[in-house]
Image (tube, rainbow, N blue to C red):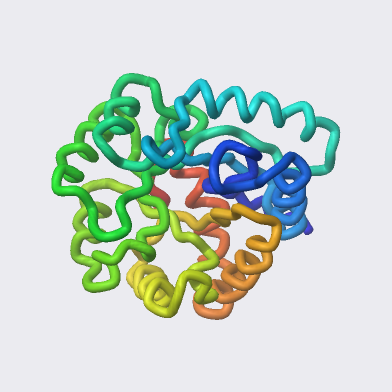
Length: 241
């Protein structure tokens, strides 16, 4: 199957966070994503002080150790970035070239505390944009503030932030409320791309079901936007048309 999908959020690097537990599992994740039509998969291991205390150097070493195991196999192309937990420490890393933006350095994947966006988010996002870094909000459907209202998310999108759907949310993987929130965000056109966020090989089956759901609701054009055109635009530091 050749579909040309790009996955902007995946945890296939082993032994560095809550993703793949060993090399074989990491390869199995990539193989399953390739079978689903992904031609490029970007590793986004956690950078979250206090839980996953990974520095940029830690992540680069882990990825470099995996690379020889991937060479010569029929797998998607890979690259390295990070899922940055948005706190003061990681924000300073983003400003000082100590974080791991997406390849090209024009966008960065950001994760937030599950309850709400931080009060300083507007100011921080504006500064990131000023420095040429597009903030990409990971799985907004899983934040409780979005369950109550999409006003905060709309404000951030209007100010130039991007959003990334965890595709499996559409299958009910995280519960009914995140599923319905994902559907609402999709209905309002507030997603710019979608991803696997796969931590285990079995997660890819739910991604497949989520893609089918998008196709059923909105057709092939929406699938192409979320998995091809949107990811390409974000990697260029732009919002898709």
